Image 1 (cartoon, helix red, strand yellow):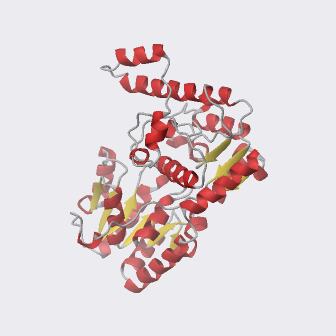
Image 2 (cartoon, one colour):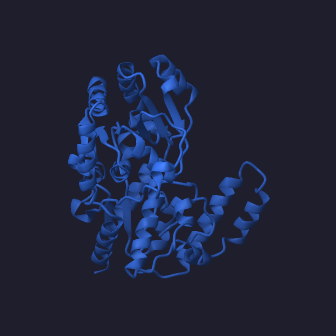
Image 3 (cartoon, one colour):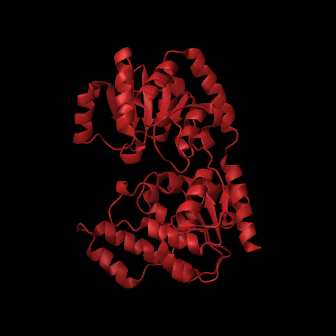
Length: 377
């Protein structure tokens, strides 16, 4: 597995997927290699296999090591760090023979000249660059790189039927080449979570992750403003996604909800507790490749309301209530309905808990191993 996804991100959905998948594959007897010795990623550092994979790393080319040392105190130090990591991974790839290569990131096209005839499997997590190009830089190469991988791959794993359909329509990929393999859930409530103190409002709804573009936060904020006028003690917590920008703060002020809206940086443990203590988790995004927070909410005990869009009905099933992501009034009415009814919240929790049983990392690994065997045969 090429380690690009672990270069920059302390936490990310893709890195969590790779680590959980690798752990399960190793338990199934697969020899997994992720050649990276230096990472900020907490999921990789906390894995059982990192000590082994980090010891496998080959040195970068000497010229690149010298350049990194020279640039270590300049603004280019991060670029030099990535260049060294890239060189290490390519040297490892060039110097070994593998039964199969499964890159962790479809931006890592630098490996393609070295793959040769080795079977190649890729995972496509979403098609956001293709469907929402306005959310990315004008000359972002991610889509074209993904297309190159999709064309070269012997088999493609899509993390939802929605993502598979997008691949077929946007890249003209043969659907018989694509296997749909769902994610599992990693987030768990800590022991004794009821007594763990957190400085949060007593009554709140929860939003998780980034807020820009297709994440549809502005529309949701309008719906929350309507609900908060009917329920003065209601607050909104935004977990992760970065601090509010000046533009967002001004927007929240305009809606009259700035004092009721809070952004928090949280650990996994704190995020689990935020789900558990919320009146509901709301997912208004117009598009996701899978929508992992839905499973997190099911696991941690949050009633789920989400947009009737992309993969959400496929993943949430009857464990959630759905709204039109563009209909502010419908979103607000559904939010108020769930907040005001403890019976409805209890029913949603039961349905979500049942739905969660259809997803696990063990199942994901078993299906991935089946894909590997198909390619190798």
